[in-house]
Structure formats: structure tokens, C-alpha cells
Amino acid sequence: MKRLMLFAVLGAVLVAAGCQDQQTSQKENTNETKITENQTENQQAEQPKEEEAAVEEEPAEAKPDQHQKEADDVIGTIEKPVTVDNPDSIEVVVNKTRQFPDGWAPKDLVEPNVPFYFNEHLEKRKMRKEAAAALEELFAASEKDGMDLVAASGYRSEARQKQIYENNVATQGQEETDKVSSRPGRSEHQSGLAIDLTSAEMALALEETFINTDEGKWLADHAYEHGFIVRYPKGKTDITGYSYEPWHIRYVGKDLAKQIQEEGVTLEEHFQMKSDLKS
Ligand SMILES: [Zn+2]
Image (tube, rainbow, N blue to C red; front, side, top):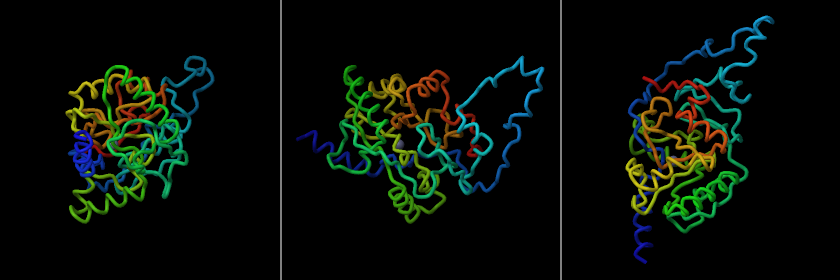
């Protein structure tokens, strides 16, 4: 009973915070109107001549085709975002300058069987099928290690994000809102591949101090084993557009998660996508 009441009270707190992409990103310049031309430096130079081809057979850092294609067109701004052409891919990169196509939604949303801090069957309980199965695996492993993780918020539709964004604009104005909230179509929660986790020790809050708890440390160390990455690492705000969020994990599949963990980089850096969020 006590626990239920705690959940009810903290539920209200989470609605307020809700990982509504309200983390302050101090480096973000919302008035940025500069349009950066696609950098030709990113483009592969002409085909290697035949005699050279024998020496260097492959580019050193080959990436999946879909990202090769995008490599020349990854620089958006808040006002002129790039629309991703691989929204269904588990490797999709969405951020403040890269958005889903209008009205896009995942087609395979299910409810993972893990503990949430609320009982209702809300939209935010859902994830894409593959990510949901991986999350169940992650929870099982964490429980085996004595962890007590609690899920807070998974899928968020474009319509819900629009509601959140517009509410914030009405109360805080657009400039302030852009610092703390994703525009509709640009929240990673729309992918159905991202979820916010917390713990009873955190009083179910989504805060940086999560990393000081056993659950936060466990997640940082083990998420990749189940195909997830901590999407917004510390000190990478100018690349991801978001402050450190040790609670927000993103499913990318086990191979990619392992690579990213070993490289110690962000999703953007892994795919060599330049961000225009830098001031
Ligand atoms: Zn989140």
C-alpha cells in the first residue's frame, strides 16, 4: 500500500518531468538560422584509380548503405531539419535536427512485460516488438544481479509530442520551449525504440544522480549486452542536443550497441553525422 502511494505521488512527479525532453541543453542555439551547406569533404572522392584500388580495397570505416547515402545530407538545423529516410530501421538517428516523416508511427508496438511505475495501459508503456523483447531480457538480467529497475516512459506518438510541445510554448514561449522540449516528429521516444528507466531508490525520478545508484551503474555497464545504448552521454550535448540522461536508453541491436560501447561514442558520432547544434 505504501509502495502504491509512493508510486501515485511519484507518478505525478514523472508527468511533470516525464522525460518530455525537458532537459536543458545550454549549448543549443534556438535562434540559429544558419544553413550549412553539405560539406563536400564528406563525400568520397572520385573512384580510386585502378592501380590504387589494389592498395586500398575498402574505405577504413564502412557503414551500412542507408547511412552512406545519408552521409551527405545529415546537417539539419532546428528550423530546417532533415527528414530521415529510414524511419523503420532500428538504426534510425533522430534528434533536434533530424525528424521522422510526417505522421510516421511504428507498426509493431507491443507492451513489454516489465514493471512500470503505473498500472494503466498507456501509450508510453509500448515499444517496438524487437526492442520490447530485448527490454524484457535486460530486466531479467538486471533482476538476476539484484537490481530493481522500473520503467517510466517508452513510446510517445507524434500527436502526444505535439501536445507537450504546444503546451510548453503556451506557457514558456517558443524559445524557452526549444531548449527543453523536442518538436513533434523529433523525439526519440516516437521511434518506439527508446525508454526511460528509473528505480525506487531514485524515487522514480529521471535525474542525473541515477548514475550514482546501483541501477544506474548497472545500466551504464550492461545495457549494450541487450542491444541498448545510453543515448545521451555526459559531455556530448553539443553533438546529441541533449544534456546527460543516464536513464534514457535506446535499442539499436546487439552488434551496433557493442560497437558503440567499445568506441565510447554517440550514435551521431558512430555514423559520422555532424550536428549543427554546436555554437
Ligand atoms: Zn527519454
